[in-house]
Length: 291
Image (cartoon, rainbow, N blue to C red):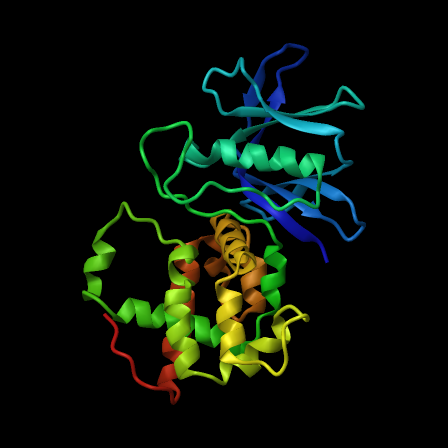
């Protein structure tokens, strides 16, 4: 199965005739870097409106670079160029927030040089090009495709976390902050997961088949706690967060029993989990008051 290493919103741009000018295509799209089933790195451009893959380039280590077009009037146009040919493929960043462009470009080039590396992401609130702090919204680089193997019990526990967070605190007041963007990194934290493991020890057995095979056996709550505090778990959560922000996971979330719109962003994903959890509780689970 193909493994998505990196994904971010980007459109294509095309050279104007035989000139050195390029014109942006306004079609909504995304760039994905995947380790394909053939063992090679694929640079993919996907149409976010149709979910169709319209460009799939096979890249060999060290053969391509992804660089800013310095002559670009607005500064967010990039070119994928090859050392082995004169090919040029132009793209423009479509995320409204430019603060993470450097992160994405740096990770693209690291993967182009070595497809086995783990992308490097800035810590939350850090931007080396700005003195202002802005919340980092995601990052990752294991495969979002790996999340498709979650069991119904595993998903139910995550939904329970989301429902608990939504029911606690000051009710609807938290939702009155439009400037705060929801991140999975703020939801799937050790502080939130440990109490769940403590009150639901049966989770160890439910989740164990989906954890790395080299973990000690039999499964225990202590093992789960070690997993959720590991850098690998944090990376996986950030991967899923980033993939959701591309809006391209409609097909994947359907395999998890969620509506397709749940794959269009982090907030729709969490809301879909919460709605499903509430539906299951109505069928016989513990009642939980919600706004």
